[in-house]
Image (tube, rainbow, N blue to C red):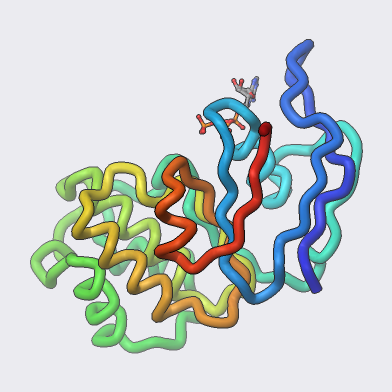
Amino acid sequence: MNIQAIDIKKSFGTQIVLSNWNCSIPENKTTCLMGPSGCGKTTFFRILLGLTQPDSGAIYGMENQTITAVFQENRLCNYLNAIKNIQLVCRDLDISRQKLEDIFEQVGLDRSDLMKPIAELSGGMQRRVAIVRAIVPKSTFILMDEPFRGLDTENKKRVINCIHHMTGGKTLLISTHDFRDVESLNAELIEMGS
Ligand SMILES: Nc1ncnc2c1ncn2[C@@H]1O[C@H](COP(=O)(O)OP(=O)(O)OP(=O)(O)O)[C@@H](O)[C@H]1O
């Protein structure tokens, strides 16, 4: 079942951010959400995650979803290393430590990086840890809010390959400002605020 947003309205004070927003996020596919800065993409993500209440409207198709997310900010625990950060939120992770290390290697993080507390990794490295945390669990719906921000071309390519490899058959919604991502992710496109 597709995930559907029907007539979503959301204002902050007098500012109308979402006004009768409708969209259908196809099941088991990757979709990019694009739109100008400030049009309400993060607000919509937060509504999907149940972190923000819409003023009116409804979301359908979320009832049986297991959700993981890459938020706008990384939301990692700074004094724990990458592996511990993942174990912290994925208690029933059914992949081995070796497999987890292999996945980190695919996104360009080596063993020595994995030993360090998050605070000692670069911004782009931290972003990749947040992305791995979203793609390794057995979730059915993965939301990523501008996941590639701060990644150089090579690491972005690695991450996109890893997303392809790890998330087949899942429903993904990824916000981006780069049209090229739609093609490289082989994604559907939903445009907001145009
Ligand atoms: N909690 C809040 N209180 C007041 N205003 C808010 C709040 N959250 C978002 N806004 C406003 O809502 C508008 C939409 O913000 P949002 O972060 O959803 O946009 P966006 O499309 O994700 O932007 P960007 O592409 O720059 O990340 C902005 O004008 C923002 O200032």
